[in-house]
Length: 95
Image (cartoon, rainbow, N blue to C red; front, side):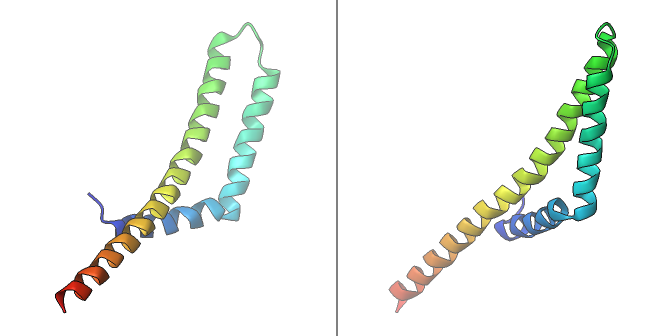
């Protein structure tokens, strides 16, 4: 199990990855290729159409997973702040 700090660091890495211009270009290129393949696919070729759809779904899933890691890091930041706030309250009551 990862600590909130670990999750926050992972989120930073994921954000840098998602913001990477080369990765963005790669996603767009693959999306474009898959869209063109879908448009030009023979409607009678169900196997090929299914592979194109699965590829589109996988590409979307990769983006979703990177976004999920970023969002988890935001939640971890809130948890860290809450832990620090509780520690501050505990030290006040100890005095």
